[in-house]
Length: 154
Ligand SMILES: [Zn+2]
Image (spheres, protein in one colour):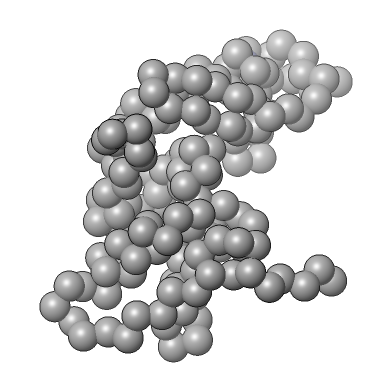
């Protein structure tokens, strides 16, 4: 029997939780890191994480989600991990490369990560802004932003 690591109630399945909170639509699993949570605790934790760490990076303007990538990139450790998780739950980042955006510099992607795994941008404008912040406005850089359309399944 699996139990919630917060409240010890029993958990039957790993589920996807769809949460409408204020003007945001989140989709996430009832898990955090390697811990399983019940739906109620997972929902509560996601809102707390959003309030504590997501708010300063994520806003909504004219029905569109805006991300302050400069603030994201100044984050570290646990906080960066939590914010990446929130961005994944909002569909701003994706662990699936297909149809999404990546930056390539010197042949190595320096992308947002979640648990060490590369996250891809679902919107081109985020990839562009991330690239601009990462390499600096004044630096002359070769802009390489790739849309990944051809992923061959192994
Ligand atoms: Zn619980």
